Image (cartoon, rainbow, N blue to C red; front, side, top):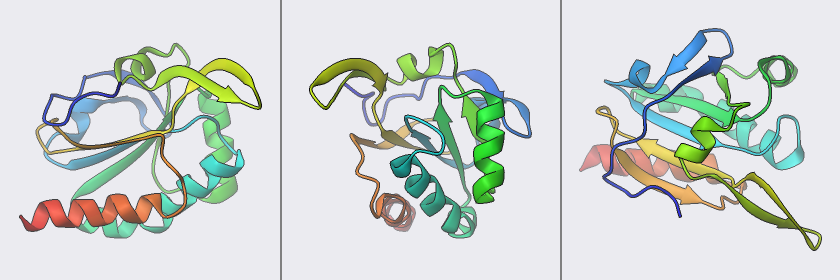
Length: 157
């Protein structure tokens, strides 16, 4: 069960690459894409992150920031960022606080096994910290494009 559209996005403060600590409040006054992904440098997560990276300048033109969140360490995030020249920050939630608050930590199935993990989810948040749209169980192909189109349509209204 993801958080509801039009509800307030839960605030948090966790370690971030290049900025030390990041808090949701840092993004007030801008649109925000918060995408939760399972693991650095795995096939799906790499595609998703690279796609957001390619479209970053278009998101920025719309006054929108992007942050990727996983439970990987900052060290892992830094390696991932360097390897793929990622131009936005990745947030590290090793204690699962934000993952649980955003309801993206849950049961997953893979090859007949059940385990706890990050359910690939993206939140689009407005300039005041309100949730505009939620994508859950994201399929990575063309996902970043879809998020960008959604934001464009919201701004047009």
